[in-house]
Length: 72
Image (cartoon, rainbow, N blue to C red; front, side):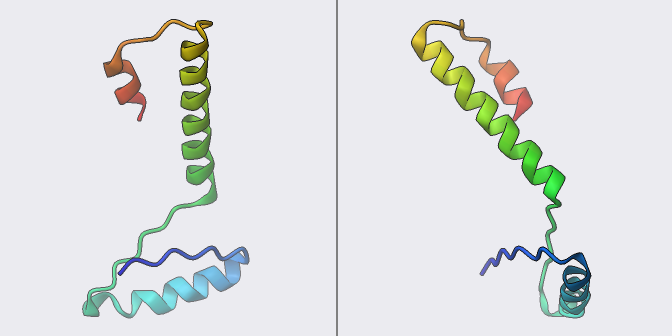
C-alpha cells in the first residue's frame, strides 16, 4: 500500500518522518518530495502541454522525440 500525505507545518512533518523511520525494519519505505521538486515537475508538465497544443494549432513545429524524453 502507498500513502501520500501533505503536511504544511514543517515541524509536524519532521515529527511524522521521525516516527515513520522507526518502522523501516518492518518494511516501511519513506519517499519524500519537497515542494520545489513538485513545482518543477508540474511546471515541466505544463510546459509540455502548452507545446503540444501549439503543435496541434500549427504555431510550433514538433521536435525530436529523444529531446522530449531527455527532458522527462
